[in-house]
Length: 172
Length: 441
Image 1 (cartoon, chains in turn brown, green):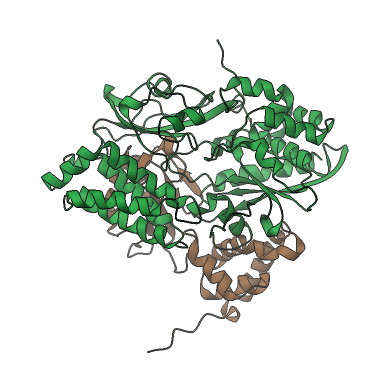
Image 2: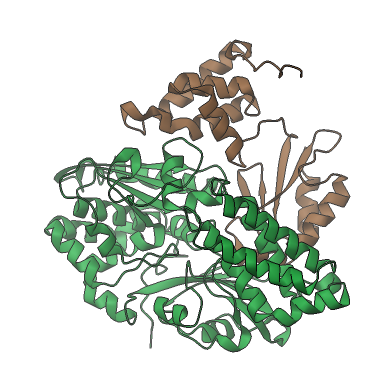
């Protein structure tokens, strides 16, 4: 049996970015009672992910350290929620909903089309690192289906193959 | 006759999300009225209103509020804006078009229940809505509506915060939501104790859905009886019904709580695409048992849908035309529950994956009649045997699809293929313009 890879250390993270993390986290921690700052784990990991690119072990440790909980707590959260990424992604994340209402209006065809066009499977990243493609569960856009989420920030609705080609083609 | 609109009446008006326009339209007058009322009288009005939870369970809101133990403080209010049940897409529009209606509802509820801290737990996939709501809360705080004094006059400290989820259906389950709000993974808690007794950080916590709380200002202004009169039986008010799938005009429709399901689909939504027939309807989000096309001439009132063998749930109506493969549809639903099972309870963790695998096998023509029976058997072993309702939510679609469309499942096993081939999701798989209140998308 080989030893597992050593976990990342907080010290490996660039100092100015850690300072930015601390500033942004301080603003968020205020939303919770002073003795309940561990509640800020989800926002902490989101901030960490935005600043450092993904929820690496070092980012998990940083969040845990600042909130006064064990790194295991950060890891269990980082691996439980689909919007936390413990591995690096492409520059853009394209997520297509293939739940029922989206498929009734063409969502599955759009997802299959993108897989072929980008030459990747579900969760795969294009060779140039431009796009990670992923199938997601219901986005709450069933009336305006099919829907996608771009970079976990912008929901784009009433898709068809043409529209999705235009969106994906415009990503740098 | 013009229908009473409570929730959608301001949707589509210019700048409807802004505090200024909300006040011009009479916003926060209900809070003003509430501050002149005895808190217990507000709870009584809500009880009289027959307001029932709009998140899915349909529990009486006023009754839930009375479960708070009298002497324990602090208490918390948590608004469930997780909206993740497939087919459900209504709360997002309340937040997009009229966030102050929700904030006013929160403020009144907190005043009525002596709560000084409220969180809105909003799903991570709604970043735009989270920003709109945060901005609205900030506006309300800056205007002195919330903060150290309510409406700038009543010494009652209230703070409201938005807490974003990060992608987990299970966090819509109220005790998983609390775990997530506490900064943990979303594992549901054993109940009892219920959150009203032991909730957030071990303190009494009321958890209500967005739509539920957005009704509170109207109830305070117009009285509980007027609200009850809009509905029927034990369900008061109007409801937001989100209709998706093979209809000509999908969208969110505000209708009296006892509106007819068939009328909603055939008249309001303009009927079925291509003039085809209705094969099936899921009336209240993907976990509610499916109805056959000939079973939809029913009232959507909570107890009426229950009597028809299903659930009005979250009001998410999914319509399948007669060209859809029901095995394909169930396979996708089964996959969803397998993906979203948190893994805490064995029957759900294992059973949802088994069901997914078996439905997939049948859909691809590799199944047998024994597999169809096995599906029912597994579903029967999950329901009722788990900590939270996700197990039941996964079992009910399987049981109802197989029961109502058994011939179609067996046809797959006899023909060793999907009889619908490429068009399993229907002959017409295109997006159609949606109607959301008065807004067109």
